[in-house]
Each structure stands twice: as C-alpha cells, then as structure tokens.
Amino acid sequence: MKNRASVIGGLAAILFSFFVFVIPFLFIILMSFKDRQQASLRDFSWPNGFHLWDNLVAVVSTRNWMMVTAFVNSTIMTVTSVTLLIVFAAMVGFVLARRNSRWNGPIEFLILAGLMIPPAVVPTIWLLQGLKLFGTLHGMILIQVAYNLPFSIILYRAFIVTIPRELDEAAVIDGARPLDVFFRIILPLLWPVTVTNIVVQSVGIFNDFTNPLYYLPGNQNATVQLTLYNFQSQFNTSYNLLFTNILLITIPPLIVFLFFNRQIVAGMTAGAVKG
Image 1 (tube, rainbow, N blue to C red):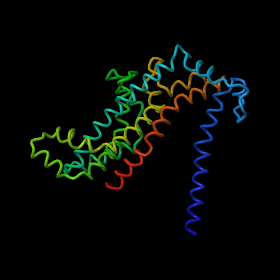
Image 2: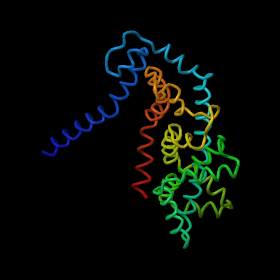
Image 3: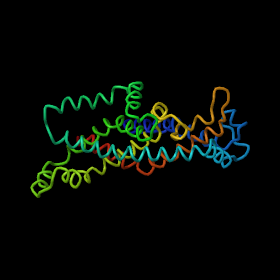
Image 4: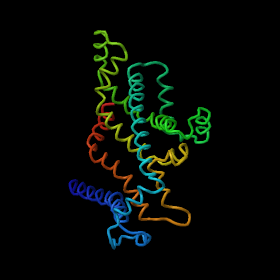
C-alpha cells in the first residue's frame, strides 16, 4: 500500500509540474513562431508559418536595439550584485557564526526582519535621490544587494556553523590574520553554498521586474524585464513579439537552472541539515 501510494503521489506531482511549468513554456514557444494575426488569437493552434526569425529580429531591433542594451545592463547588474552579495554575506555569516556576543540576537532579528518586512519604495527613492544614485545602474546594484542580503547571510551562517573552529585556531597559530583566515581558509570551503547562492540570486536579480521599474527609469537603463513594455500598450499588443521577448529573457535563467540543479540542491541541503 505504501509503495502504491508513493507511486500515485509521484505521478500526481509529475502531472502537476507538467501542467504548471511545461505547458506554459510550450505555449510561449508556440506563440513565438506565429505571426501577429494568428498570435492575437492566443490559442494552441499550430503556426501557419514559422516566423520565429522575423520575430527575433523585430524584438532585438525595436527602439534602437533596446534589447541589446537591456541584456548588457542586466548582466552588469546581476554579476556585480551577486559578487558583492557573496563577499558581504559570507563575511557577516562568518562573524555571526564565530563570535557569540550580546549583539548576535538583535542582529539576527534585524536580518529576519529584512526577510519579512516589505521594502518601502518612496523612502528608498528619497534616499537614492539624496545620494544622487536614483536612476543609475550602480544605485540599482546597491538596492539589489540590500534587498537580497538577509537571505544570503542566513544561508552562509547555517553552513559556516558546520565548519570546525579548529581550522580557524590552527590558521591563527600559524600566523594568519583574521582576513587571511576568512579568505584563505573559510571562503574556499563555502563553495557548495556559494554555488547555490550564485544561481538563486542570479536568477532572481536577472528576472527582477519591480525594482528596476521603481528605481531605474529611462530607456538607457532598461533591463530585460522592462523590454516587455515595448510590445504592449493600453489599446494594442503584438503578442507574437511579446512572447518572443519572453522566450529570449527566459532562456538564460533556464539554462542556469538546468546546468546547476544538482549544486543548488546540494548546497541548500548541506546548509539546512548540518545547520
């Protein structure tokens, strides 16, 4: 009975995943092959002709090659933000895991609050304007780091707790300074959780829509998600180009997940079980 129930549960999970994830992706691909007239029907009918290449050219060249600029901006924002997140979160997690003081409780409370409390958009805009960072790519990078830092800190802290303190003490006895202990001893051991953090944060930042919409106005600062506005308006929408655009910006995160799926699971499991 247990084996039968587990088989039925597995089949149900597969069917649910197929309907939730696979069918929408197939619909996106199907729509990107259609012309504007047939795509406006928004159904699963087979394309009358294969217009994918024409749609791709139209999407990339629209508004003075805005898609190319958006990919460059999103790549710079993602790579820089994830790099800063790894360094800062690992350092904070190392300090919280190794130093037990009366400040640990309040600090951990603030970190959890950063996960639970939604960001205040208007005060953040005022702050960015006061610092002359509103509407700039480096200002958006700081926003991404600030918003995603709590999750990364919790992830690293749970993993660092599993590393024996004897490694730190042996390095100190050999004459290593605190920064040497962290960068030469601890940080290389964090590779499993670092891979998890890189993939999760990269996909989240690359696919972020609301934060660039609020804090990064202007066509020259467009990110890939904001290019979706190029093909829809109040009275008219080019569904063939819209779904081709969605296909273009979906492929990079999908490739990352396919190649690093095992590393994500391994890093999350190691930090959760051992922590």
